Image (cartoon, rainbow, N blue to C red; front, side):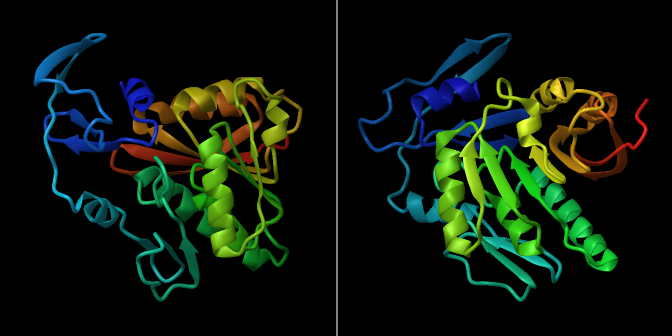
Amino acid sequence: MLAELLELAPSGVEEVDVPGGLVEYAVYGAPGELPSLPALTAAAGEALVEVRTQEIADDWAERWRRFHKPLVLGSRLCVRPPWEPPRRTEIDVVVDPGQAFGTGAHATTRLCLELMLELGESADDRGPGPGPFVDLGCGSGVLAITAAKLGFGPVAALDNDAAAVRATAENADRNGVQLDVRRYDLRDEPAETAVGRTVAANLLAALLLGWARRLRPGGPVPERLIAGGLLAQEGDEVAAALRHAGLREVKRRAAGEWIALLLERDPAPW
C-alpha cells in the first residue's frame, strides 16, 4: 500500500498507527494535485482500505513541523529539526527531514543510536578511536552524522534512493561533518562494498536477510553490526542468517514491538 501511495505522492506520506491494529496513511496535496475521490472502500490484496478526503486548515505546514520533535538521549545526544532550539547535550545533530524522511524519532532509529552511543563509550575506554563506519540505508543521514560526531571515521552513507543521498549530503553540510555519501543497491551490488569496521543497517528484515545471504562465510564482514528496523518476531531469523555469515549476536535492545541487534564478528564461525 505504501509503495502505491508513493507513486501517487512522491514527496511522501505520513504514517499513523491508530487503535485496532489499523494503519493510517495521510497524503497531502494542494487543490488539483491529488485525484478527487469519494469516500469508498477498496480492496488491496486481502485487506480492505477505507479512502476519504477532507480539506485541512491553511496552517498544515506549521502543524507538519510540530510533528517532528527532538530526540534526546540523556545528556549525550540530541537529534532535532533545524526549527527546534538546541538542548544541553554533548552531541547536537540537526537534521531537516526533507521529503519522506524523519529526524530519528522512530523507535528503530532510537535503538540504533543507543547502541552506537554504547560503542562510542567502549571505544573511549579502550583508547583508540572507533574506526570506519558505514550507514547502510542512510535515509536522512541521522546515523552517519551521529557516527561522525562520535569520532567514527571515515564514515560512508549509502542508500539506493537518490532523494536520501541528497538529503544526507545536505544534512552533513548542515552539521559540518565529512561523509562519503553515495548510491548503493543492497540487492545487486557486491555485498562487501557495504562492509566497514562498524556497520549500522536500519533496514527491513527482508533486505537484511538478503544481504546476510550474500556475505561469503570467511569473507569480509564487519567487526560490529547494528541491525535495526526489525519487529520482535523477526530477530531470531535475522540473527541466524547473520550467524551463518560469521556474525554472532551479543546484545538485543527492544522498544515496544521493535528491536535492534548488536552483532560482532566471530573469530571462528565454523
